[in-house]
Amino acid sequence: MLLKNIRKISLVFFFLCNFSYVQIQNKITVTPLLNEKYSSNVLSFIKKSEKSIYIIMFETGYYPEYAESISNQILRELINAYKRNVKIEVILDLSKYPNVREKNFKTAKFLAENGINVYFDNENKTTHSKLLIIDEKYVFIGSHNWNYYSLEKNNETSVLIESEEIAKIFIDYFKEIKKKECKIFISPVKN
Image (cartoon, rainbow, N blue to C red):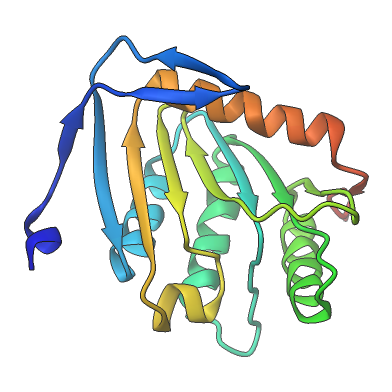
C-alpha cells in the first residue's frame, strides 16, 4: 500500500482563501492520517498542547455509557488541556438532523460542565467542517467527525498540516464563522 508507506510529505503550495490565492512562503509538513491514525495523533497533540485549541466539528459524540470510546478520550483530553490553561474554543453544527443535533448538544453540555465554552452555528447554515487547530501551528483537517463511526469503524481520510501560516488562515476562518454565523452559546456551568 503506497499511502501506508508515506510518512511525511514536505511541499510548498498555494492555498485558496477568500477567493484569492495566497502563496505560502515557508515549507510545510503534511502527514496523511488514515482511519485510526487520526485519533491517535489528535490525542497525542492535545495532550502536548500548550497555548490554544480551536475546533469546528460537524458531528461529535459524547457517550457516557461507553467511557473509553475514542471520542470520549478526545473530549477528556480537551478538558485536561483546559485545566492546564490552554485556551479552547469549540464551534459545533446546530444541525437540522435530529440525531446530529442531539449528539452535539450532549457533547456541548459535557464540555460546558467542565469549563469549556461551546458555540453553535446558525441553524440555517450547515457547518460541515472537521477542523482542529492546536498551538497556532498544527492543523488537522479532513473527513473525520468526532463520533463512534468516524473514529472507530469508517474508512476516513484526514491530514495533519504543520504550518503557522496555514494555521493562521484557519484561525481567521474560525473567527469569521464565530462572528458571523454563531447564534447560540453554551457557557460553562458554575459550581
